[in-house]
Length: 231
Image 1: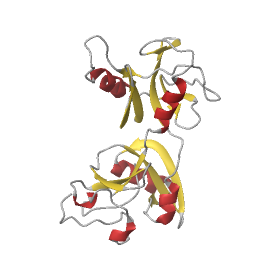
Image 2: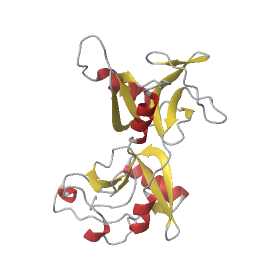
Image 3: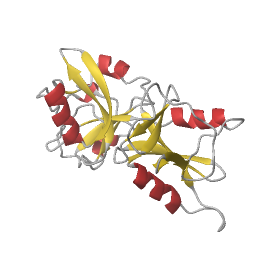
C-alpha cells in the first residue's frame, strides 16, 4: 500500500486514524490488507493473500475467533456466510484479541496404522478426548497442550528443532512446514532442522513456552483499502 491509498472498513464504516494502533508507522507501507498482532495488539499492513487466523463479528459487539487459516478475502467470505462480517476494530475487539486456543504443527504424522515422528522418538501421548481421529497429521493445542489429528493441508504455525527450537510464525500445511524446517541452513553440515517432537523431561516446559509464543494474528483491510480484523 502507498501513502495515497485510503483505508476503509469492509462493512462500509468510515475509517478514522484513531480506530487502530499502527505498529512502526506501518500504515504507509505497501499492502492492501491489515492484520493485528495477537501478542501486542498493534496493526500491520500485509498482503491480502497471506494466511492468518481471523475474528468474525456478529450482532453489535459479539466476536468469534476462528482458528482456521485463510486469506483476507476467504476470511471475509467465511464471516459473511457464517456470521456478519470480519470484525470491526473497536476497543471491544482489541480486548477480544486475547489468549485463544489454536493448533501448532508438530512432527507427528500417521505412517500406516501407527503414528511416527518426523525425527527421533517421544513418549508424549497427551491426546485430546476422542483422539486420535482419522486425519493423518498432528497439531498440539497452544493452551491445553493436547494433541489432535488434523487435515495435513490445514495451515498452522509450527516449530522447527535442531539443537535449539525455532518458532516459525507462518501458517503452513504440515508438508510445507516440514519442508521449511528441513530447508533451513544449519550451523553445521551434520545436522538439520526438523519439525519438533514433544519430549517429556527437562525440555518439555521450554517446548510448551515456545508453543505459547506462536503468535496468531488477525487481519483487517485496502483496495481502496479495507480495514477489518482477520487473520
